[in-house]
Length: 77
Image (cartoon, rainbow, N blue to C red):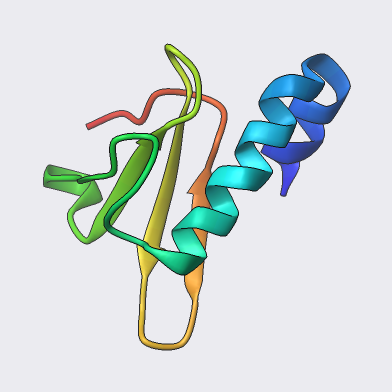
């Protein structure tokens, strides 16, 4: 994931938080830390969690896997 590489290069603390939140998404996709919320509009079917004040993790949950779309910017509705 490019965004994880970015955080490793620029802010290791955020990179570690990202890894931690990704693991939490696997355990409890719609509850937990980072204030998970379902997205609307163009992102309908996706969820977001707060990574930093601005950056959000955006992901989609299916029966078989979790797809991560981004973890670096605020999503554009």
